[in-house]
Length: 53
Image (cartoon, rainbow, N blue to C red; front, side, top):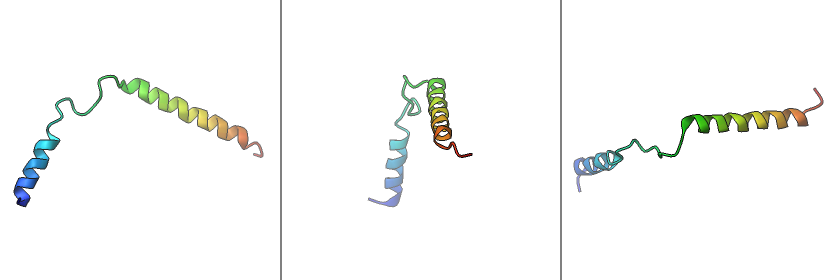
């Protein structure tokens, strides 16, 4: 197996995803909002434990 044929196989494997690899049920707004909520919760917990300032 030559390097050229291996590269062609890898390219054809990478192009196999027709929909771009994203799952249909993942909404970017819900995902981003959930991440923001988790980060704000972590910030709130951190400031509650750091009362000496």
